[in-house]
Image 1 (cartoon, rainbow, N blue to C red):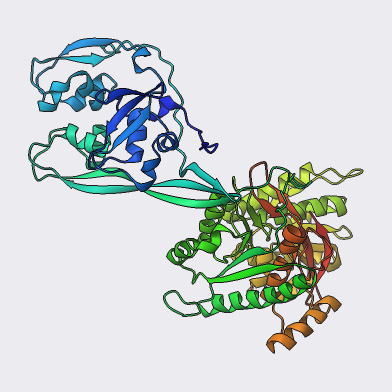
Image 2 (cartoon, one colour; image 1 turned 120 degrees about the vertical axis):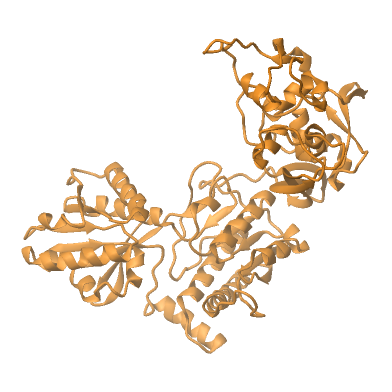
Length: 604
């Protein structure tokens, strides 16, 4: 068995509260190990911290641990470094009246656990005049002498840990150990001490005292302590190997291996059984998406695709999704499409990342799902990507006009403002261009000049900012002809019914959009005929999204062709950075003209 490449942590940083001093050393097949006897309350997380050995290494050396820890079980921990090699100055210290172990630990910049390791008798208590051993040096002067040391970097322990266990028929079975923060309420029993409790639960005394707000390590029978622990879950999952002979395309994506039949999972909040959290609006959107997707399947089958599509009702419920993802079909699924809701998207994205399954998100998603997840495909550009596309479009096509960037009043839109400014100034154009003018919602009117094309960019998703700007513009527009004024907002403005639609039309309103649908285009009319024939209703925008997403991504991954005609999208997938996911970078520039929306340009 080989260990999956996930050893990301330094050994020294893991040993946070105790060094093995009571475990017996043994030799197996020429290697040295600590033999740890499992006690009630022990965890894999605790073993890792106590011995400074990563969990995946411990499990690899002890395969039986995939079934969990058992009391009195022997766990063999490889000795990966010599603890006796480290040098530490030890001094004698006489306990003063009223001192506690907690106070002494702070005085000598150490931990209570380390004091007890040096002085096992302290488990029985601390007495005035008692001479104990302490680490380091200490003087009674106002400024203690500090010995310069070099500290090892402390890195966060990866979660989950993965250990490969077998390889069969091209599917690697891995053991995934997931940790999550938890607590235990422990009632102190007779004869128990803080030290024995800390060793049982493998949590440092300092941590227990901090969580419980204690200043003394003395405990009494019947006292209730909150113990911070890591609950652990061990799963065996199947992961498909990517054949080594497959090389990445120019855009950084690795094509799927050819198969006789592919498996597609569609996750949608259909609410087929209604229930808690039911939303008629979300259910309708999901149904429309599914109906459009079915039309795409018909087209793909005609092109030779052989795929089995499994449709799952997520009901917009995380627990439902957890149970769905445990189904056997997900051991062999090639791509997952959906779900449609933010938190559920991130939940499924993490699942796909861990199992190396491609996931296509058909709706807007946040950047979290893309980060360090090369299996995630965002079909809808983010607002930052849209505003960057607008900046490139204006710099390239209208750079010699007056470009006036209006700073939004709302904080949540400021990242869009900064993104436009940066991208516009950094975009390379042929010849000279005008300098970007920056102003505010209150002060932009001074830049209105008769006979000069002035393009106002208001990168705000806030309705009140949009209303205030448009009203101010209408009051100041007498300084110029309306044909000389152009307003560029965000796609959110389309839904701002309080923003006067006449003003939008009058002042040449534009916005960057992730897609463009014109119902009177020939291809849309043709698709609508098929849709009406199949479903006895008219085509919706969500149905078209389902059609385009299924048609493009299945064609790309499985048929590896580019001869499909999309209806309202143009998917130009680009990887944000190495190791991240892929995002659609194509931006449509939409203009409102005579109360109709027209596509006047594209940029990616």
